[in-house]
Image 1 (cartoon, helix red, strand yellow):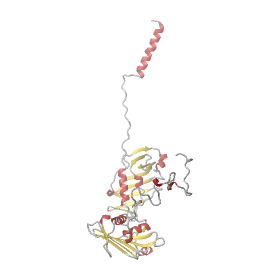
Image 2: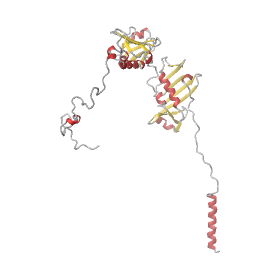
Image 3: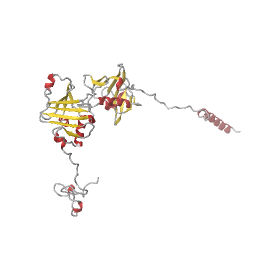
Length: 367
């Protein structure tokens, strides 16, 4: 074996040894497990009946404090809170599960509307006055079905399902309902104004409504159902006073109300709404109103007032016919000529211009 062969064999042996050391095909590969984040609980779930207080605050958010008193929620000034808005908030919290971490960068908090300026802080306390919920709520850009949320002491931002952000911004936390009634339980209604009195009633168990005086003429069901729905969903524009002292009643024209609405339900309870003076120039514009059994004085806009203080003429007026009603199939509207009766080359009236000449479409661009 010559010297060259020995050198080649030596180099080959060295390469084999290096291959076995660095690329050993017989060694056992280590197991690589995916890194998973431990479940995060941003707040402790709580039911409305187990909460004593709700506090909402923020630089640009509307600040509100709601207090639970015997199962009914009130504002800090004693005005009843809107039960629908409160229920929507707790429903949104119930949906805010399985948070997904989307950011750990404190510099981008305002992009999620969740920083010191745009964020809305929500705190809910239990019956022992211990905080069960304490989070800052924001929004995810171009995502109306989820909300951004974080703890006040952390920059970690999570995405949670539901519209918690929207639930924190209702039209009003105050209860602006004028008459919170079930339309199916209403059996009699009386409207009194300075000009006339309108009374309607429904016999127990019956579905037909009729005028109570001076005749027993029945009322068209569509008209009556529309009025009942308006009564059940009537809302004020604002609350202007929380006490019905003599000076307040005089200031708002409620010492001698100009109109009243009395609704009797199946259990015999009468719900009376009194209408006083006008904020603008009477007899139009916003007026003031109050329930006979409550001290709150409301602002009621002109449309709502008209929807509540119904007239006999409005109830008996037949509904407007839909567009095209009374026309036979294939019948043309007045003044229109069917295409089959047009002279050759004539343009339909819809394509004519004010000068009477058809538009020149030969140079119109193709879109």
